[in-house]
Image (tube, rainbow, N blue to C red; front, side, top):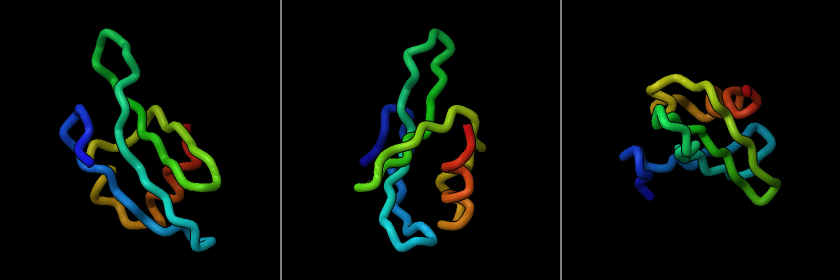
Length: 69
């Protein structure tokens, strides 16, 4: 899946073994900002501040990022 921002979704396994998908979603703000959406069967999380190279992070780093705001 490629998002509106041109970055493909990333799938990773969390330390507890659950599967997660993370992707960018536009916030609808005039500046074109996006949030990262982390989703799994367990629920979802939204992260508003993230590095531009988030899709190159390893699974552990993505998991830690998912707990950010």
